[in-house]
Amino acid sequence: MPSQTSSLPIIDIAPFLSDKPEDQEARRLTANAVHLACRDYGFFYLNLSSYVDSAEPEYLTTLGRRFFSLPQEEKDRIRLANEDHARGYARLKENVTNGKADNHEGIDFYRPVEKPDKTKPLWGENQWPAKPVDFKEKYEVWVEKMKKLGLIVMEAMAMGLGMTQDEWKELRSQVDDSFWVMRVIGYPPLPNDHDGFSCGAHKFLYADSTPSALQVLLRQPGLVGSDITGLPSEKGSESGVWINANPIPGCVVCNIGESNFANAEFLVWEIWTNGLYKSTLHRVVHRSSNYRVPFFFEPNFNAHVKPLPAALRLQDGSAKQQLKSSVVYGEFLVNKVGGNFDRYSSD
Image (cartoon, rainbow, N blue to C red; front, side, top):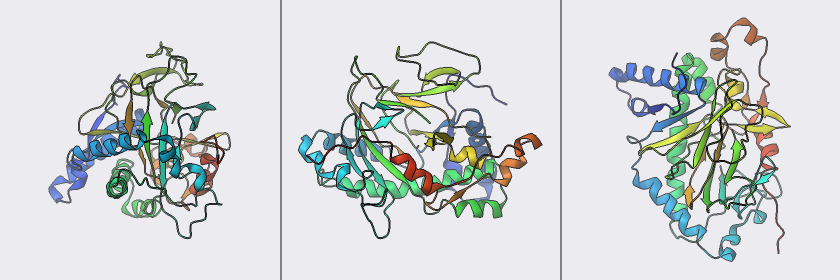
């Protein structure tokens, strides 16, 4: 069992892009690497150089930069209040993490729904910027690629857990219509007097070209280290030290995900694996301006998330007696999103 180090594992997804029989062993090794990374870190670098051209995400961030440089009144044309208070543009410090305003602005998109109704939580329509003119076209192409990639990574995780074909088929039916979320985020430099972070500690394919911006809490029980930024430790009850997840060309950073449900931890993969996989705290600290496009590959809206038999087989009897709670994903999401933003008035 590899010990935790001060850097995250790097995993190449290429073997899962091929269906050649001779690549089966490479897929097995990749799946095992994903399993160990999820179990020991909750984070890993995913090498996508064989899946996407690096120029594509770079252009997406350029489009984001152009949008965020527009006059405020232009950006407010697609503000959250126009729709369901979840889809659309959020002003600087309107997004809230752990009760503190985050020093960023962004646009949020969700999977389109049938019969949109903006009076219902999460059931409105996505609001696409009119400028830049090719914004919607380029980002919709990216969404389709990330949805396919999400299923690929899910298959690798299923194989790493030792799932049977029937078990993988069942799990796939819970994520094959992913209620995905995509955010386009702009980060101005973090003010010295700001009581918070660019984005506070929380538990996504995640991309950023800025060194030291994305920070991950490396769990080491009993270890209390100095914070690498001089900012508040923001670790809650967890022991460990913050490490930088600096950019690696051709790679994105993957996290198995976290959110908060009814004041109790709700972790999709923690539930699926009965606690074998644990999400890892991470945060964003920007000392310069930059942009990122996180994509969240989520379960289907009506997915019933519960411990997987394959995960239980990897655990001893005592763990089986302490099953994680089950939940319907859409019910969790509606509760979560309601507390993410400070709503501002129509005027």
